[in-house]
Image (cartoon, rainbow, N blue to C red):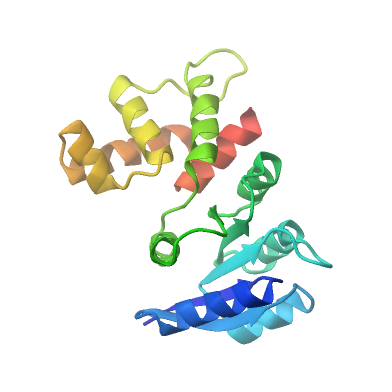
Length: 211
């Protein structure tokens, strides 16, 4: 079954390009491409997407406002934000409000499709700049102490957490640390249990929320 994708993008040429790229790619189906978020709930019900590519800046309702409505009404739909610049505040707001990541609009077509597939399969996507900021937050919060809700991670868990947030998949992490993919999964499960989350985007959101 193809991955159903909907695009919200006010730039006509980019919107058309995304539509044709997704629609023409194997295992993908673009079920809607809209210039704004007017009649948002109707458009989503009509197009029934698995993944939404959401422009942050649009006339009328912004992508961040739309994200909040989508999370409230369609919690099973995953939203990837798109932006021209790496605006930290807006991206952090997006992650905190439930986005599974974001892409710069100049992202290459092959990487865009790869990111959509990663998100569909339970992953998350973000650029190195935001990943680095998330890592800085984690590094300042890994020790358990009064008023700190982050439990202490052991050395291996800390290494794996940094590599996860840096964007490496389980296979790449295993190769870098000379351990099996199954061992990486074991450590990731323990990290998620310790931090009481179930996804990379939730990890980042928790770090940002706790500062």
